[in-house]
Each structure stands twice: as structure tokens, then as C-alpha cells.
Length: 300
Image 1 (cartoon, helix red, strand yellow):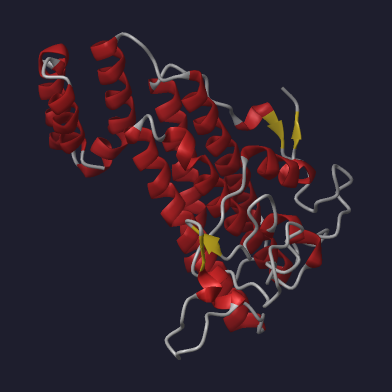
Image 2 (cartoon, rainbow, N blue to C red):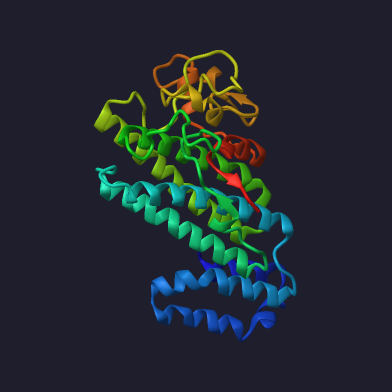
């Protein structure tokens, strides 16, 4: 995120913007003197403060809602990886999982800071009772009851979390179009979540021979399957919904064009599997929350 390019773009449509924020602009320039890590940590607070003072208002409630939704997802993932890393003898690929764990915890810190800076109240881990990653709706005896004792199960659940997170962020991009700063930040996290998904899929394949590729690959079925059965390549039917929805992963129409009618590199028409793998589909906020309900219980 190039803060100064953002400011210059705003000045094009608001010539008085520079006067509004001076000398705050100089203060933000000086952030870099404290080192890159401090600068990155301070940008959400500084940027939020700058815009609130320049225009006298905080981010809209809809933007805060989207950011809190993202924070809820990140809290769920961070808690999952924190618990997994603390489980004795569970994680054998420490270099991979520890990096993902660190990323998720950094996302939590960033979103918390951004929401606070924008004048909102961030959700916290205390707002939720993360009681059941077994998908047992609080029974602790769901279909993934060995998630923190069996590494294969842990990776399978992690893959589903990451795939769902990618779709969730994409589903909210349109709601942030009016705020390019937060849209840029959300898309930056979205890209990292996609890398996490690929890494987990690689581990499942290389260690245990799971039949998954680094990307979601749908079966060659006609039409779209809102249940997600045709799009779920994890080998676990219980998570079909994570790959379904109103625009499921086996959707082949993009921008009004049916990709399967286009020629492939081999000269024939493109298959459903190839056409759907080339694009990730979004999930709505309601769809994501409905999927994740078995994983946590809201207490506040």
C-alpha cells in the first residue's frame, strides 16, 4: 500500500486535501524513520486518524461491519493455528504452520488497529466462545473430533478454513469499493490466505497422498452445483457447503461468457474442471457465517 500515492490521487479530486491534513502529512512521512516494522504497524492508526481529521467523520458502519467480519474470520483461524501449535507432537511441518500461525495473528492485530483507527469497535476473542473445532456444535465430539491429535485431520480442516477464507474476502470486496484504503488492505490479506491454502494443499499431497492440487478443482459436471459437491475436492463430503453457495466453485460463466465454450490450448473446448479452476468464486457474509456456526458459539 503506497500511502503517498493514495494521498496524491485524493488531491486530484480534492485540491484542498493537502491543506486539510498539513502538518499531519509531514508527521506520517516521519514514521519511516522509526523502521519498517514500526511504520507498518502505525499506518492503520495514522491513516485512520488522518482521514477522520481531514473530513471529520469515521469510516461508514458498513465498512466497519466488513472489517469486523474479516476480523472474526482471522480470530477463528488464529485460534485454530495457535491451538494446533500448542498441541504436543501434532505439527510436524513447523516451518509451514508456524508461518501461517504468525500471519493469522498479524492479520488479527492489523484489523483490530484498523477498526479502532476508523472509529469502530473491534470484536475480540472474548466476544466468542471458540469451543468446538470438531464441527460438533458444542459437543466437542463432531466429525473432526481428532483435529488436534491427528495431523491429517488438522491439515484437512486447515485446508477448508483457508479455502473458505479466500472466498469470504472475495465476497466482501465489492462492499469496500467506496474505500480504496481498506479495499487494498483486504485484498492484501486475501492474497496471503490464498498462499496459505496452496501451502496446506501441498502438505496434504506430499505427506499423505491426498488427491488435491494447489488450487480448487471441480469435477466435470454439467451446470453449477450450489451444494458444493461437484466443487469439493478435499475428499471430505461434510465440507461441501464450503465450496457451494450462490456462486459455487464449479461456476464456469465469467462476465457473461461461458468459459467452456472457448477453445483450450489443445484446440478443443475448455473442460468444466479447467474453466472453474481458473476462477475463484465468492461467498457472501451470510453463507460464511452459516458454514462456521459449528466451529464457534457467539456469546456477546
